[in-house]
Length: 268
Length: 268
Image 1 (cartoon, helix red, strand yellow):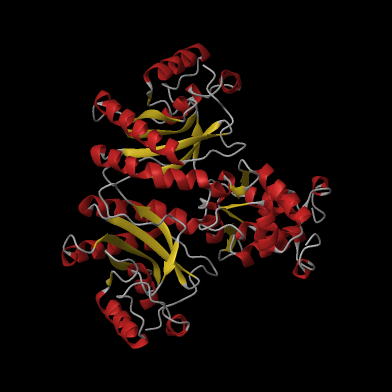
Image 2 (cartoon, chains in turn purple, red):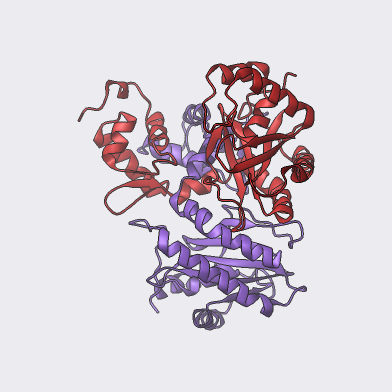
């Protein structure tokens, strides 16, 4: 292993640095030098040299025992991403209003690849316990925000997600393509997507899209509450209203990038 | 300029990639290729090649007109930084409680270099307008959180900050070293730091530290409200209580890095 994998050859230094960052995940936020080398296919010496440069910069930090983890400087640089910064500035106050009115968890997600990427989250100690943080990802077909984002994506994108297979997370997850397609049509009609214990038993999510002027979903907003508790129907108008208000604000101010991160357009 | 600055030679590729990221700031979140090249001292061709690799990865995104800005992938990687992720998981619910009780802005900052780095923020539409977001920085001597972090730093660190000069932001900013030192001593005694219109006219901040077992300030929490409005004295116990609760939670779970980002220890 000292020479690294053959895949190492021909890679640019930049791609190696980025591979080091890619090695970290929310499931494995801390990695030893050996693990980093194995996961990236880079020789130990290269891994050590690049990781040390990242530590000096503040992008990685060392932990006792010799491990590495993501450092505060990368967090700081990432906080400048205009999409998430705009969502924070423009949408978060409306999410806070929704939290004030419901004391439920309030989530905001964007479509990224074929998953829902959670970019904002409000939770209080009275809210149902949801194991999720900013930067976390969940599947599209089993979550409220995911179904809303999927409903407003292109037909081709929906086909791609559905044909990749619909994994079952609970007995209530919709895994039949026909049923999911009908649910998505209904979401486009009503502007609201509900996931009743489809991702986690005991939790229901009510979601609504933030549409741009062309009808693309820039993001989706949801409340997540105990399935057994409050009346879901009662909260639907509140979620829809917050999403409409937030989308209006976002349309006034946010400028989409020339390419991505919103690859899918609403073709319906 | 086609050959770049002489400083370009001898730099590693990694340092060049990181210099590209360093070029962006909250004041200048979008940069043209020319601006990036000028700011980093890298030749245009190198700048273009490295920026393109970052775009392919998702760390930068292009905007119409040819500019670049930070992309969602860097945000996602940065969201894994354990300090900020722990603060989000462990401290944010207490901040939410404080918001529920006050409807004031609630801020959380850490010491980074010689500034206060804001890592969490809760604001509603009823809160006083504060122009600040996660990832923003403010000076230590003129803000509530900053004074609290400074009060709990080492004597050497305080000397360094004070001797670097205390810039005046408003007529109320404390710019006399002796006055500031007395204020910091008082903060260590009471556990609360108040900044009355010292950074921005019309805004008062009440802050309290989150101390680790060794008495170092891991972070500082504050409410920021209109100076003219509510009774400041009334909110002091609420801020202090939230900080004590949050610090207890943080001490149970968060493991500090082997080096940084908390260079200063409380030597008092």
